[in-house]
Length: 459
Image (cartoon, rainbow, N blue to C red; front, top):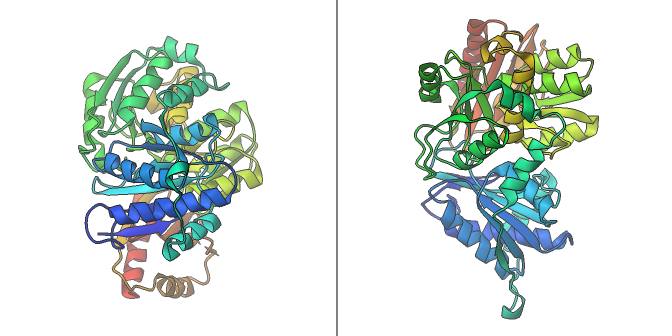
């Protein structure tokens, strides 16, 4: 059981003792802390709320609504929704903030509160620290009966979101419709089963097959869209001879594709391909986190822009994008951020832009993937027990590789000529992530294995 408080929100497993898990008491405490912080911002008293399809979603939703109402905050409930839809709905509703009830890619026993500011963006690390301090001190006061907040339901936000995508200047609905794409979607028993088909139909796609369509939170497989979890999708694309497959995570902010022969396009290349298309139409700078493939830098330079790395975490990517005025950015896990739509990872705009590029290119999905270099990232993790001093471990490894270029902005990134390895603690799980990239798969795996050995040696 676990309770993790980070820039990615308040995340924990359901069930267990308060303080150790995301118990009902913890949901109330952190909702109250967020609501108190929000009122201190003087940006209004309205909060937008949405949830993914998790089993615990409705339970957590009721607790959050009641807590915010008890602070005098008005709640606009989107019900079953997606993370990017809630982000955009903060703007649609002119709200002071938003909460998304989702644990993203984590298994079904997890849930979380993702916290948004009045711009519909994740709150900063500094603001998050204030929220945690309020929660720790239980420094909140509830209003009297005459000042309780209101509760309303919004059933139009998803359609507004889709309309904004359909009318986005770089999305070409006519070209997509003309290609008559056959698409298989793995909706992983969550709100992607609602949102993605609506989007595809709005884009003129008629041949849609949906896997794991029932929104019940009983995920048919591990919900993180990684290769080892997408066998069903790959097989169905191949069986149906579809043009491509689409996989999203439970809250629809991560995206990956499957080629027509059932092979993976590669989640790292979702951002690469979409950025390549955007940069051809709108030259400029790009940003991704430092655990992402260097292929984004390649396409950015090819199109006359400059690439900038950021620390891992959507809020860090967004901060860097604003600083360098990036026209496209995101994360190598399939997270696409299109800033002139909104500053949030959004699988729906990613799908629309990818299909437009594919339609314009007149290539198959496999042929489009073949236009990019083959870099291989070995993604690994080590589970942590309480009490480990990760900083001390990283310091010993840094000293061992002191003759190599090192970046300590986010954990420890070490470069080896054309290869690199990035070690960092996760924002969402009690683990150390070890990512290594090379032109050769075996080299990337060997670098990762060496780092795992170094970490365990110093534990």
